[in-house]
Amino acid sequence: MAEDNPGPPAPAPVPFRHRISPDFRAAHDRHLAWPKSFGFLSSEAEEAHHLKGQFPLIAAMFYPNATGSELDLGVDQQSWYFLFDDTLDEQWGRSPERVRHLVELVKEGTTGEASPLPLAGAFADMRRRSCQGMPED
Image (cartoon, rainbow, N blue to C red; front, side, top):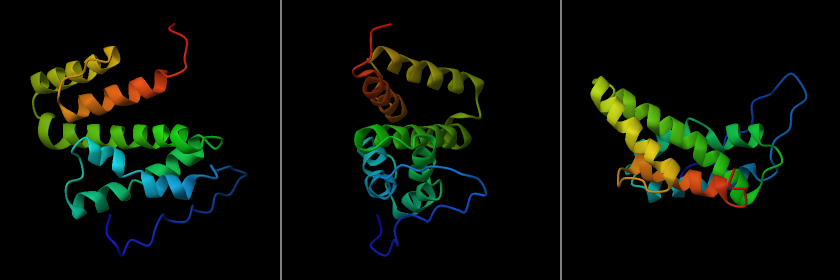
């Protein structure tokens, strides 16, 4: 993250009662580490573009009771959807066969045995973390 980054944006005024996770600012400070660990956001320009999505804010408002690793999972989910969409827009989406192949690779993540493709590995990581402490069914 660039040193001159002023931190997370202040939540926009919402004209009705709402809640936000008390861990929002800390989640904002942590959130780039996860996509970078899968090889995403390799330049400052990519980081800046990703930050515009305000994924920590979205997750903090979707999950106002979540903190720590639980909120981080919500942030990572929001980040993943954005990265997946960008991949379809930029690299894979021009060919129905390539889209089908990408979706199949990501689908493997539901078994925990994802391909080395970063999108699939990131999905498998989210799936694993989402299932921790959950009953098998």
